[in-house]
Length: 55
Figure 1 (cartoon, rainbow, N blue to C red):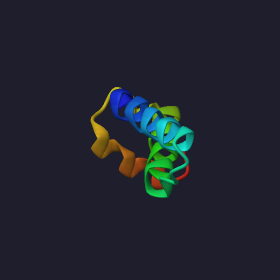
Figure 2 (figure 1 turned 30 degrees about the vertical axis):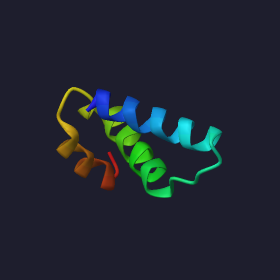
Figure 3 (figure 1 turned 60 degrees about the vertical axis):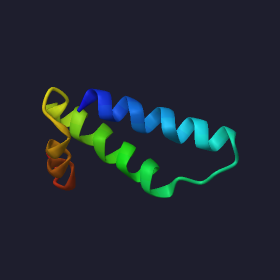
Figure 4 (figure 1 turned 45 degrees about the vertical axis):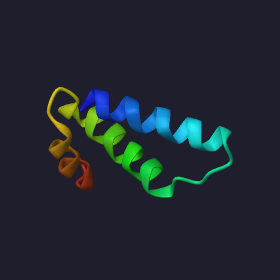
């Protein structure tokens, strides 16, 4: 999932530089960030599910 988080961040940054809004990618990047902070960064991207919950 750490790679997916990095990719989402890179896509968002590149789009921003080009003047393109990527709202869903930015939202996904935030969800992946939260999942990583909750200790799920070593799991696959399906662990982003856990970011929908506190703790």
